[in-house]
Image (tube, rainbow, N blue to C red; front, top):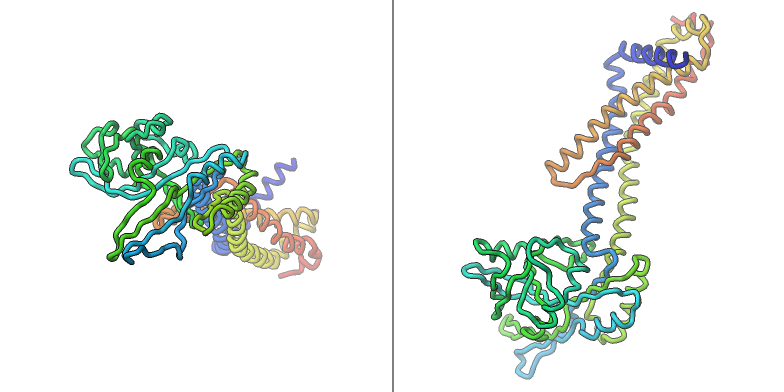
Length: 423
C-alpha cells in the first residue's frame, strides 16, 4: 500500500513540475553543472595522480638510487694548464660496503655510464653505454622484446655482448636480423643478445635509470675496454674525468625499511666521501608525497565543485518556496480533505528529489563528456571512477533533501483555513 502511495506521489510530483517546464529546467541547471563539475574535476585529478604514481613506480618503490654528481669545485688544471682532471663519483668499494653492511639490502646493481657512437653498416647513432651486472634487469624491470638479458657468464668472461634499448635497435638494425648482429660501439664490436623496451620518466626531478638510447654491456667488459678515465675535448681543453661508478641501485627487502636504510646509507657515504659527489633518490618518498598531494588536490577540486552544487541547492529551495506560495490553496484543500502534514512534507520532498536526481543524472552525462573532451583536445589523462559517479549522484540527492526540507515543512505548517482563503 505504501509503495502504491509513493508511486502515486512521484507521478503527482512529476506532473506538478511539468506544468512549469522551463522553470524546472532552469532550476535543474545548477545541479547539472554542479554534478558535472564534480565528476570532471575528480576525473582530472585522478588521471593526473595515476600518471604521476605510475612514473614514480617505474623507479621501484623498494629501490634506493645513488647517482654520481660532479661537485662544482672539483676541477683542477694540469701542469700545462690545458688539461683538467676531475675525480668524483661512486666507488666499487661503495657497492661492496652496501652488500656487507646492510642486511636489509637484498641486491645491488652498479652502473658505469659513458656515451659513444654505435654503427652497423650505414646506420649510426649515439648511444649511452651502461656497463652493469645482470642484477640491473631484476631491479629495474623492463619488458624483453627479443633475445635475453645479460647473465652471470657474460660478466665472468667479460664478453663483448650487449642488450639494446628498442629505439637504438630500430635505428641500427633496420633491414637486418636483430639478435646476433655485431654492432660497433666506439672502437669495439659487440654481439647483440637482447632488446628491451625502456619506460623513461622523470618524477620529482628524479630520472629513471634507463633512457631510450641505452646499450647495456657487462660491467667487467666496460671496465676492461674503457677503464675509469674518460677524456673529452672542450673549448681548447682536454677534460679528463675519473669515475669508477656513475650509479648504484640498491633494493631493500621491505618497504617499511626503505627510509631507515636510506638514512644509514647516506651516513656511510658521508663517512667515506670527502666531498658531496653523490645524490640519493628515494622513489618511495616521492610516491608518498605524490599520494598526499593527490589527496589535497582532490579535496580542493571537490570543494570548488561543491560550491556549484550549493548554488544549485539554493536554486531548488528558491523555486520550491515559490511553488508553496503558488499552491497555497491546493495545500489547504488537501489538508481539508484529510491529508496529514507528513504527506504534504513527503509530496514536496519528492518534487525536490525529482529535480535534484534528474539534474544529477544529466550532470553525470555531462561529467563523462568533459573528461573525454579534455583528453582528446588537451591530451591530458583523465580517469572516471565508479566511486566519483556514485558520490556525485549521492550528493545531488542529499542536496535535494536538505534544501527541500524547509519549503516542505513550511507547506505542511500552513493553516488549512487560511490556505483555503488564499487567492
